[in-house]
Length: 437
Image 1 (cartoon, one colour):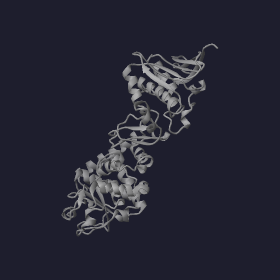
Image 2: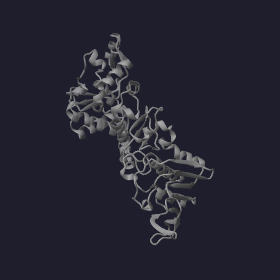
Image 3: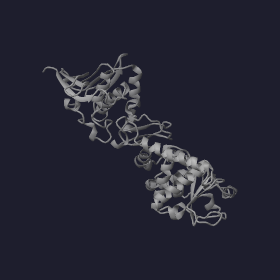
Image 4: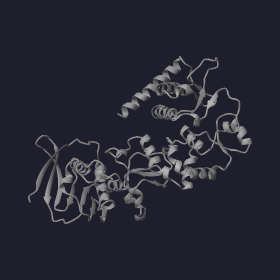
């Protein structure tokens, strides 16, 4: 067989932001797939000029070099996602004028950027016969730092053999936090988190191996990992973050832990004792302490829902004081109302500002007795919302963003300071939505 020249119709500037690091990561993920999923033995090394990845598995057919063709895209927890990584690695190497080659049983593949039939500069593959019987070998010209950085993105290669199973399934990794792995591949974005996690699913990252959204990652952490957690030492770390801005508490899915709720209750008692409540920002806090209750800091809205599911109430519930308003307890809200609050709150906190804690009132009125939809309590750093608007998302969102502007500006309605801050809030949403298109 003579060397076959194959035009790919992939132009020179495709994935133009990719560097040799992305190329090395693509060769690494194919190497990991062969070892982790196909049962091959393999090794990887750098000789000072070239990086090598080699295994003794069955290899793959040359047809896998076509865009969209590959074994990994239909395996939910495989590290590859789009069946184009090897081709793009060859493209990047050719663009950087670095040597790259792939050897599979029967074929050796190299690539050049050349004049094609339709494009002035496109990736052209050269497929030549070889005497290889089994396995795959990747070679890439790159420095040692680039190679090691690529290796460090793959949890499977960075832990001892007995721990590798963590990267084949959804897992909590107790390493001090900050890392999110999708199908065993660490995404580039760092997260503020209590733990690190390996999540599985093709829809959780994009081609560049960046997370799609914090909200999606947060939900999958609870769905895939935290709802199954039974170790009280880990649960106590999550409960301790009652008002911390970490990915675990971005939104808490209380309903998911129902099967293990007694374990979470036991963890809370180990952490805080039997007599515990959370601060409400009123004189009830002092009265609860006088009654020997441990008063923990006022939790975020989502963590408040979790604490109440564990039968931990507010100081106002433990030691009621006469209130200006007739407050509605969180447990008394409907699922629709809770869902609308969560959605509106998350949107505002994503694009504009962190909100004060919310309180819900039957028949909310101002000091003059006029019925209103919302108000800011500056002294207690609370936002009060009228119960009637909670089931209407549009009305709720409009009210809450209005009160958020009051919170930030500390300005009255119809003032220049309020109008300036309102414009800033609108701009924050406009720029954030544009970025996320």
